Image (cartoon, rainbow, N blue to C red):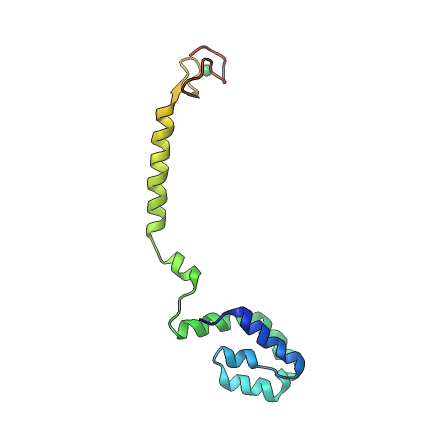
Length: 122
Ligand SMILES: [Zn+2]
């Protein structure tokens, strides 16, 4: 699994005259050679690569068959179903421990002597 952090560290080698090493890391051998030989197009293309590194790395990982963590989360449908079940259970529990005030119809915690909304005795 390749990561953008390593790519950025390799990108910094450009300051020492070694441009395009991050492209070798991302599997872009041909353009890496071009960057290396042209000093990253006079460092301009090297600077632009700062913005391209994340997509470069995710592309390289996809080609290797790795999944990005974000892709795994978005492609798994059971998560909302689980949340729905928990929410339904919470609603039932709330109805069980709360009583309705007979005067203002507000939901009041069971065990209280007076309605906090209108002050009427329960
Ligand atoms: Zn009330």
